[in-house]
Amino acid sequence: MKYKFCGRSGLQLPVVSLGLWQNFGSVDIFENGRAIIHRAFESGITHFDLANNYGPLPGSAEENFGRILSRDFTGHLRDELIISSKAGFDMWEGPYGKGSSRKYLVASLDQSLRRMGLDYVDIFYSHRYDEHTPIEETMMALDSIVRQGKALYAGISNYEKSEAETAIKILKKLGTPCLIHQPKYSMLQRTPEDGLFDVLEKYGVGCIPYSPLAQGLLTSRYLKGIPSDSRAARPNPSLKTADITQQTVDMLNALNNIAMRRGQTLAQLALSWVLREPRVTTVLIGASSVEQLNDNLQVLSAAKIDDSDLAEIERLLSSR
Ligand code: NDP
Image (cartoon, rainbow, N blue to C red; front, top):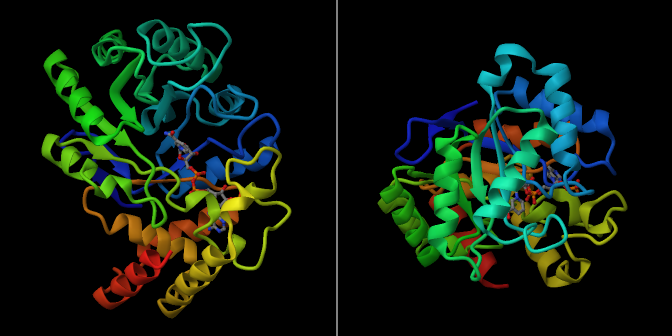
């Protein structure tokens, strides 16, 4: 594993991090998730990303992760782990179970800590900007959470560039620098290139792009149809089959040809492409099997994408 300093902080993160949004909930096979976590840690992935609502059912990914920690990562091993959680999206009924108020963030983090059996998380995020809550209130909540020792660092996720800049400035003034931003970024979703990366660089904030494989689209999964065990085939999938058009599949196959020419899988090419961006600290992947994780880990030994392949990728992406 390679480790990289997160922005201008003293914290190093592995360049590949593992997220537990899907595949670790109460509807999933516990031992499969446990095996993925073990393989990740053995390979040097020290950073595990969670949120209050991960599952399904909401909360169950944190519960399962807590079970794995208490069985397999006891004692000093807590000191080898960077564990994050978040609050912002809908979690429980009523006015205090969603949004970005201080009330919700503090209550939700207390619940997350209980579910995971932890005294503190390493990173706590405001999961989204909330237009109904003054941003000062949300940042004050993050600051006080860090001062109380319930989180070691503060982060933001899904904040657009101007919201991010405001949040970063407020946190700086409060004395709790923003450690990291977690935006969506992949070959198929490039919004952070329109100024967000510049903001993060300017203020020395790290960046952990989520869904770098576009939820599995940028892998060999959908090159020949929709497999029955894939994310797109799940009930109420977050990856909509309507988004898997013939035009997209054709482009994915063309990208796959570039990957094969480089001796890579499409997943490895997609991760190499995200990691080519110097402002990216670590890629936040998901995996539904140990095999997928092993495949993705090979990005660590991949050659840089050369200029002619980069130009060809650019042409394919802009033809969509
Ligand atoms: P990815 O884009 O990495 O997609 C992961 C999925 O891709 C897997 O579940 C699997 O799909 C497929 N896959 C992964 N590797 C391979 C491979 N080598 N070969 C074939 N298929 C593969 O990331 P996610 O969308 O899962 O997001 C990652 C993490 O980011 C989350 O767990 C969460 O921590 C974070 N996140 C944060 C959000 C936020 O708002 N802050 C929002 C969303 C995610 P299949 O299940 O079909 O096998």
